[in-house]
Length: 154
Image: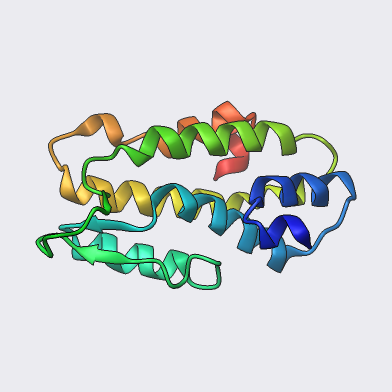
């Protein structure tokens, strides 16, 4: 209870994994929170990114965080468009995933939710940077780095 109130989402997931507690709703909320914490609040020029991020943050403690259309000057929000959040998010998902996946409670790594979130973020980012093909495979690479077998991703 305390770790969640303090936004220690990683610790909450580790506790659920260690205690073999399979509560899908809590686990999904925690993973959404882990992902949103690396991105929000932010600003973007993309209506697609705004729509996806607004949907992603629903049901997480970040529900009230700002996703602002760029051009609203005078704010200090990080930019979704520059992609600086991608390596941070990849590193966090990889590190946490490695601690949880393959340890006997794989339900604490809901592949469908994580892959859909990462792929949705990739698509939103790629919409802004159509010429940048380097961003294309990072969600799959991230999950493979966690130790998830390729065939489990499809």
